[in-house]
Image (cartoon, rainbow over all chains, first blue to last red; front, side):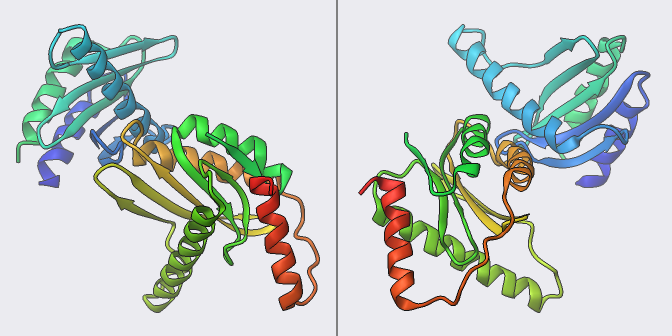
Length: 117
Length: 155
C-alpha cells in the first residue's frame, strides 16, 4: 500500500509552494508516510492537523453541515490543507501562503484515492 | 482535577503538559517508582499502584530492548477503547525519569507524543542536580514513602 501513497505524495510535493505532504492517521495524529522539507516538524504538523480536523469535524456536525471534505487554514507565513482519505487517514499539506490551493486540492483528492489501496 | 508535586521544580512543566496534551492522568516518577509529581489522582493507593506498574513496565521493556540489541525503546503506547496510556522515559540532571500519561478521546497519541517531547525538555531544563543519597535502609524507605504520600495527598 505504501508505494501508491508515496507516489501521490511525490506528486503533491511537486506543486510549487508545497513544503510538505503527509498521510496521517486521523484518530491518532501519527504519520503514516511523509515527504517534507528539512525544516518542517512532521510529527508536530501531523498531531496538530489531526486535532484540528477533529475539531472542525465536530463544529461541522454541530452546525448540521455534514462531513468535512476539505479544510484550509491560512496563516501569515503558511497554509495548512487537510483532506479526509479512506481507511481513517488524512492527507495533510503544508505550503507557502501563495500556493495554488486548487491544484493542491486536486492532487490531494488523487492522493486520497491512492489510499483506497 | 488535582495536581500535586513532591519536588517543586516539576510543577510548572507538569501543569503546562497537562493543559497542552489534554492529559487525564500524569505521573512523573523515578525508574524505581518514586513519585515526584502527579496529576489526576485522588487516592494514594491508586497512584502507588499505577506508579509501581509503570516503573515495572519500563524496566521490563528496557530489559527486552537490551535483549534485542536496542539501547532503549523510546516510548510505549497502549491503546484502549476509551483511554490510551503513553509511557516514556527522559533524562534530566536529577537522573532518569519515567512519565506515565493516561489520555482520553479528546486528544490523540500524536498530540501526547508531541507535547511529551516539550515536557521532557522542560523537565530537563528545570531539574536540579541529582541529590547525593545515602544507602537505602528499611527505616528510611518507609519514612520517605510516608513523606511523599503526605506531600501528594496532604495526610
